[in-house]
Length: 337
Image (tube, rainbow, N blue to C red; front, side):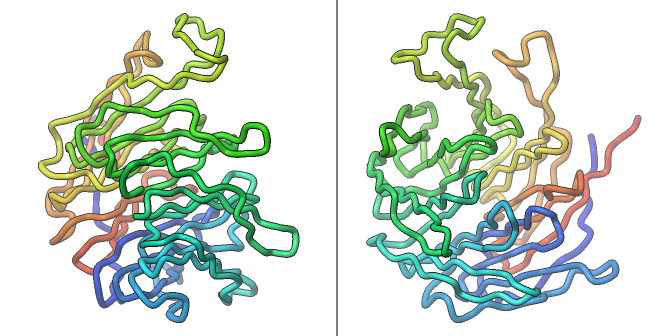
């Protein structure tokens, strides 16, 4: 087993912390929570400190934060039914826009790889796609209402304009643009309870989902003409569940992060723990991948661990946040035996 070692605890939020998000170059960490604020953390010497506190964007809990690929914009989704977009110039943050349209709490926000599209989702069961114009304005490009319950998370494919969402309706859905409009082209069913989070691997050909059923599922994309002869109706890629990881968390798994540096999967849970999984490479890793637990921290936080995310630039560095009001940074130390 490897060791996940706590290297720092970041305190400052006065309520539960819902989300942490690394800037693309790994130099900043954004957090948000029940105190209606967004905090920006940066490293000075060997210590991480709070560089900025953004407090005037929302009137209720800030549920999710997401950096644009260029690192110059930060989107924040709030229970006040709006999404704020902040621009970063010379180290200062300014609220550029407030996106309105959702009827209820906005749960998640995510930027497309091009930086030209922003997705949001809400308890109103809808997923919105916003187009970013040349003059930094945001226009609604599509509203999709295919989920039948609260939508918990949206996440863009790392290389294509394909969007994934997951919901209280126990499903994951994938969307693409077709004939100048956006459509849901596949629904992934398999979880027996709320799907809380999703994340693509580095290639975008696999998607991991985590659920209140305490399992992780790995979904594989099969493109038209695939060598396995998996059927692709209407010449559209088919996604199949190729692996289920279970038995490691005792309560709902709230978040999952798939490292694009190491390929490791990290999960956080309502059982207060963090787990890290590694793929066991075999002759049929594509169609029947297997994952093994390589690190676990029971009691990583004193309450529910809401979010975890691998650093995009420093291999083995992991951030987590919790209902206990803290953010923790962890380092995975490899067992070389």
